[in-house]
Amino acid sequence: MSDFTLADLERIVAKRASASAEESWTAKLVAAGQPKAAKKLGEEAVETVIAAIEGEHKALVSESADLLYHLLVVLKIGGVNVAEVMAELERRTGQSGIAEKVSRTT
Image (cartoon, one colour):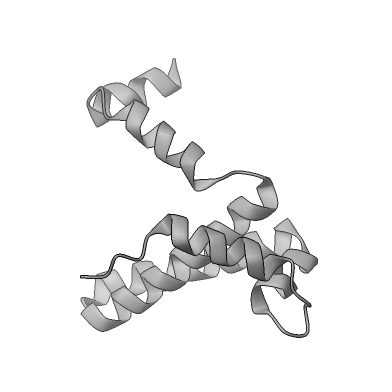
């Protein structure tokens, strides 16, 4: 098992975001702006769903990696860090998922 974390990936995304767009896909996505990065995130989400439905383990792993990477790029552009997302997830663990959903609709 790897010790690589989302925080590690977040640091790499941040570093590459400041590189030249000619040298880095991350920098190219950041330079293109949130609409382009969000569209790419959506594409990766669909590809992940397809891999899950088809039951292709290797494809699901690969597409999930792409999805997490593109999510971190979108978060970077949006000024959101992984710690904020993790804090929100932690907050939600204090109640059932059903209760949490009800609290969002009222």
